[in-house]
Image (tube, rainbow, N blue to C red):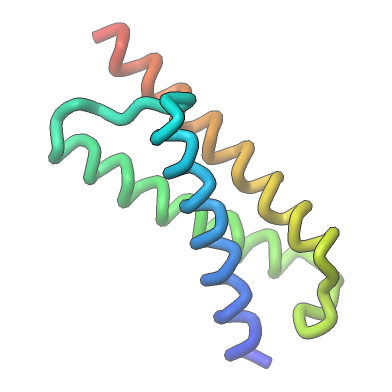
Length: 97
């Protein structure tokens, strides 16, 4: 069971990261121009997403091995929206400096 949960967490984490990368490519989200700052944001975001996925899984009563596509999308959307808001806030902070 632990392996199934780990694989699921990684899958959801990478799905959300890919969606955010797509948003960056579409210029919906902008990253800092400084490469070191961009790498720091990327690392922080990845950690946030993974913690959010892990917490969401821990707080659900759904059996991971039997989760359906609708429930998966709810996980992805909820955590994605939180991550998007964090990036937006970080961008506003950088823009005001």
